[in-house]
Image (tube, rainbow, N blue to C red; front, side, top):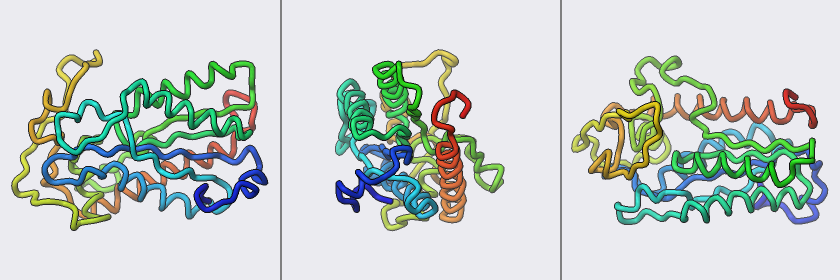
Length: 252
């Protein structure tokens, strides 16, 4: 069920153990061939496929399109919250629903730049309420929940998510092909961080002049359908685990 469709008395009447999902994404450059709203469009489709499976068992907040995208600010059109402001926004969303009495809160992410502040948000909010034993505060990125798309379709060449890459471009070809530009003009941009396992501070121009990472030329709508199906199944499985939690123990 969608928060946007409910009245406040309807929300008040819900069981406070109802999981609440906060989808968060971004509005930022996606190379020369993909729209700025890619992350939000793709996460929105994943959520659309998932929410129909849960009826009134899970509450979905509206997708938050403003994310932490400072590393893309060299590309016109990108909109970004300051990283510390964004952390406060995420903490505020969680605190809002804790104030309303809900105990199972899940920030579902669709943009790599939100990963660090998202994890910090659930950590910080949990510390503020450290004496409580009934809270389940989670953050996860939809493509990092365990599914392995190349194992489902061996034609998917990319082993992990990039940026405006084979995976994202395939998903957009499935969802909104009219928004995908000419892939014949696109070149491969290699993955990798030569300083691993260290985490490196970076901006997108450090890695890619056109703004993508990966090889979008291998994208197809058929691969996009596989990717959507794998990721929607992963999110659904996580929500079933959240619903099954016993409400008090670490393992649930």
